[in-house]
Length: 397
Ligand SMILES: [Zn+2]
Image (tube, rainbow, N blue to C red):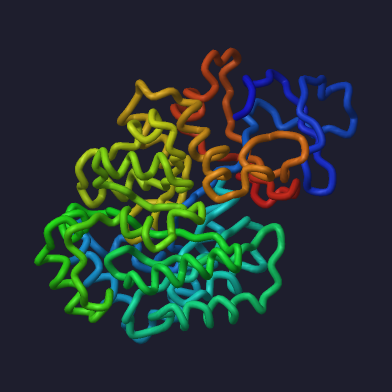
């Protein structure tokens, strides 16, 4: 991701960290393991998911977001939902690793993901989600701070970071958004927010939206106050959210003004292409964002709207839809740029000496491959091996 591909490369790892990456002769190096005809590349980063919703897989047919939320809330209020959510988190981490995802940004309402994933080798940023006025905590800034402190009792290490996620500018009050921003400022914790996922959200801020008003009133969330006359991104700017390198999810309905705000901010964008297609949204402006120099990375979103937790599947889906987009750019968005977006660019995302040894192999039997990136996106093979901190955590048999 930071240099041209190396033919017959040798990657040297010590104590979980990359020591060297160079052309070599594995036959002469007795300590080296010959991985065969594979592409060896950084592990994939899934920068937006909700593993706890895995049990909703295939249970909600495509529909407008507000109807989808109804169905999702109904499934989550069933008596057996708690154990199913916990099981989904554990299974989701395993499924992610087997798809070559070595790092996830995972949002949970309960904050249970941090404890449940502490034994998983996957690298994770676990965000606790705040919805103002929700029935269960965190439902305001105070309960968010309390939840953060509670989850924090668990030791954090290189593989686990705890973050906060004020859900969206319409479902979190301006006061709670401002409090979340100052919490992130004092604590230094990562921050992610869903923004402009629907046209209704854009309309709600611009001139009001009866559909969004009805949704908020139905669940009693968002504080009940309409906020027309502005925009979602302007609210994130005035409440201080944009100052804290937030990871902003979706941005499906941005205007030129929004792009100008994003360009001036320190925000990164995570887009979920297959979930975008599932909801049938208007074309996304991710290429405009990339051309404007706005950081873009990819996520799957949850299994309630995406068919898998594989970042590689997202890339292959995008490549099929946009064959003219440079394959290496796509791969960078799911590795190096994802790491930057999570604030982990110094340790993750490329096979650079000094970084964590998180990498995957993809079988590529072709003898001569001119465009390696394209071959990775066009071969039918999934990942064959996955390493985190230099330790093999999955091998396809
Ligand atoms: Zn989401």
